[in-house]
Image (cartoon, rainbow, N blue to C red; front, side, top):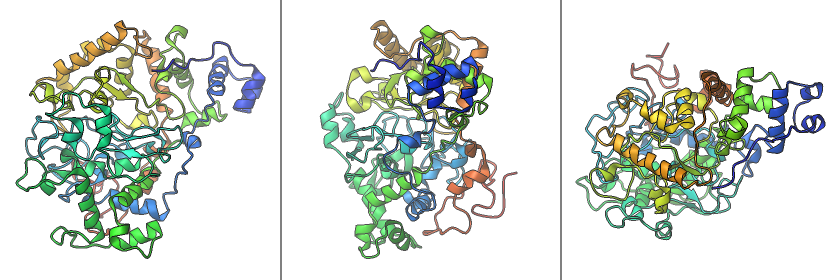
Length: 549
């Protein structure tokens, strides 16, 4: 854990501030503006995480992201043809699903997304990853800013880059992802699997692929997410079971039309789209329509979800009126250390992306079935966080720092999705024990995946005990309690809202990421997203009736 970045103790001179930021500040500006601009200058913030990228962000109109867009919305991406990538990452749900825990396979209505979506069966809580009936363990993270991750794209770092070089998006190394969940994680075999053994089970991603490509087909082989009981998943009558890698290869063969004749689309118009997307008009389908290329196309589409034109960006670039006075006070609290009277948020939510990409213990209530390496009923549905990947006990209950871009529209918050408002999650960060003492497990919405109600409090206590031990050991970077007034909390919330691109609150703007009725539907399996009342999220996107009003 690194020493925290702190707000400049001394205010920079007026001439330095003018050179670094706004011309408006040449005419003065408030003392608060000057203090914030001193921090901005010292930390080389531009207000836009796109500026840090070595790998260009493709235009959404290019053929490859357009191909990725069609793949993203196709239920053909799941072996059972009932789940699409968009199921858990809808643009109008903050590129998430607006529920504590997601529901992939086995939903009451495959096309119904967000609140109201449930499993029609009673998915087992145990064993984790053990059957096609198992539940999803954690909150579905937003795809906003996916292009800006350099080290990992998951809560616990399951899918990661071998280099993690800042700004490179993983293209200078290799993506590592599990091939077979139980062997990789040592489920029922190894108490804590060593890191080097984990890496030996790597997915066959080719070098030079961005880390966002790891998100593309990874969920397709996860039983609870998209696989279900297809292709011989554990708990199904089909044997032998296909490995995770084989599942992805089978899906690619289905899209390319060269696989099992009994596992084909009734309609398949994908090949011309792949040829246009990859500008390859010669290769046979089995060389063009591959799991890697599907992942690359999906990644190109997902990397367009940057949403960096925020009020805060405008402020950083010189418009002192772009954010409110309350948001400015919140920014000061956000960037200042506790010793300076601040909340020390930027120690973890750092840079223009607002994430250090590190893993921290916050003792957010544990309500999902989780991931561990134990095979007892109680411990097998705990969630060990980062330790489930590294095999290090000191990493138990630690989760990656999320980005704050678009945070106004990405509720609920936390790896388990238990906090419904920004105020709730801010207050938890300020005083974890107080937050947990007042947390009511009965208030968790019934929508979404099943809740681990029997052991939730015990598992949360385990995480809190870990946080306490880290505090007692005075480990650097561990979250500390901070006392703020209600007004100061409101100021921080207003600053956080200034990190949301207005496009994320505009149906018209978000429509760019949603196929419309005139777009190709290459396999006839496009998901027509509706809410719990049967109304389309975007009227007219896939049919003319039942539009939301």
